[in-house]
Length: 127
Image 1 (cartoon, rainbow, N blue to C red):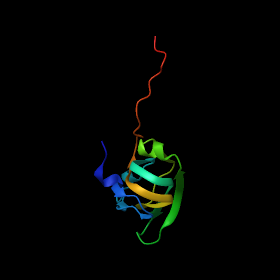
Image 2: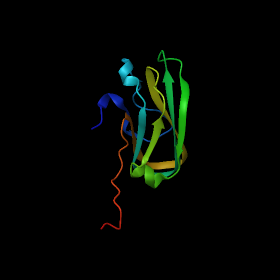
Image 3: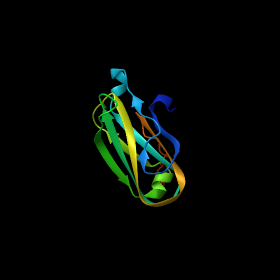
Image 4: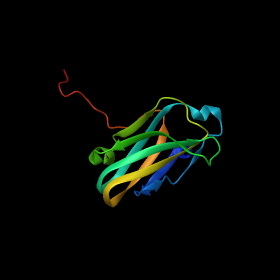
């Protein structure tokens, strides 16, 4: 289950710029470490998607905290892309997207989570 208050983008049209939502983690217990899950939906044309997590204490002065470039667009479209966050976030958090190539179609979903969503993998030689 995804907490709606932790969603940066929900099938947002993929283009350079900021995420649809800026998160306000008003309460300290919301600022725990975890993961940023990034999922593409039918992304074509792009050669890479760079996601920068930005944070702020006052919602006006932003600092880039972590950046990850996802160049495997097939993996992005399968939802196999995430970033680990190794320390608590500041109160306000948003994402910025940069696109390599020219996007001809697609949307993006990104959210904070304590567990990465990915397909189950089973061993092939089961006894």
